[in-house]
Length: 503
Image (cartoon, rainbow, N blue to C red):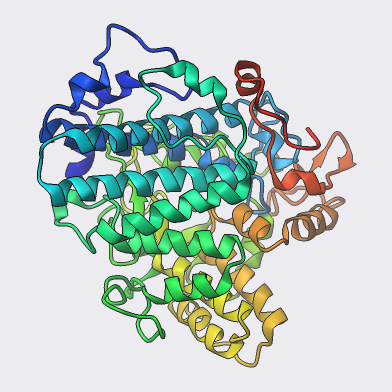
């Protein structure tokens, strides 16, 4: 099933040689792009090289923004740069900012090169158009991350591999223009991408993935009617349902099977970034990195574990009988001390924990059917169709073993959907973006910090308050912190890049 990942080894280095990042100098010892794009097989290798660059984006930094800046996770080591996301103390020199920026623009740069150069290669037209659609999907995905993290960002849609100096000419593009390009790329991608692939190509962008991401782009901009129509194309029984509505569905057996490494790219998954274990440097680090630092080899055999762990508040949020809880969180204690007790997520150690650090087989699921159902419910609710919206919330709750909800008006249902998304999608990189999208970040996070400001940490409740305060003063999120600061180095390289307000 992971043949596509193995393909990424072939000639990926040749493509990365063309342009290693948005601002890096060219190297005359590497293969120039006009020599690389000479055959259909080389185009295939170049396309696979773009997919390979998604791996560091999600392995390195994405979860820091999506989870650690929220009430789901925290970094227990104050010396770690991730800790400052926990306490909303991120400054422009935080290395996680630079890593996310560089990895994302490197991926965009590779996609831009393929989009410009592949058109000149004599090859099957249908395959070429599909490849171009895949590149537009990946470019849109990266820009969607960037615009949500930083707001206005440089919008580069041309190949800069032959003249890197042009990179310094790009300032920050207004948010509305960045979103317009994202919408254009996804719309065009959906027109040429196939509905599905054979097993050897699982993991490539599909038409359903493009539609699902486009719906998320619409709802992020509060274009609720467009979002509802777009998500509806993927859902049986929806007014706009068509031939895409039978492709995906909830995994009916158990919530655990969504994440099992023996059930990857299952019917629920619209798009995932793929990783493969086996000592090829193509594995993921989620299983080991999301465990308590001091757990050693007690939970998984990889050892050297440690990173963001689950907040008690998330654990408490699961209602009695929720089947998702056993998969979403586990508890570990070494001895009987608050300093060696923590909750952690089990989503990335389901059936296949790695035996070496950063060598997990676990994919990063970017978009799945339950996410689509809940976003569809949100879009319906915001267009005044609360009764209809509740139906899709209850579909997700039913798999979790929870009773159906009834009689919720628009305002109550908003909070219900927010909570269901937290429980269903925890540690999948959605929580912080959800709170920003709905305008609830300040309300939720400041209430969280207020709630736990005076509660001590114990072995039984290990993170109730120990790390929600900074220097003895209560953390309060400020309005400007819905965006993060641009990386210091990028502004030093390019004076045209202004800093976000407040930093």
